[in-house]
Image: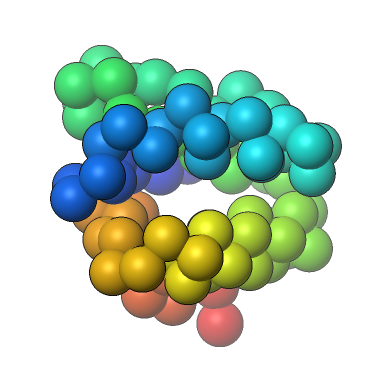
Length: 83
């Protein structure tokens, strides 16, 4: 499954998000045509639950550091994909 998402209030932070994610060995998050560029997490069968949890934790941490940043359409932060 692909989970596309954007940073609505601060789209200029996309490059910083990608750079910081890469430092944590989370790559291939850049761009998806369904969100006009934005970001995309590909979480297919080869992606472990631990990997998804790591991405969710990173997103929450990044969100907290940046203030009231909204990850639109992700479903990841709302808990829809991770129990």
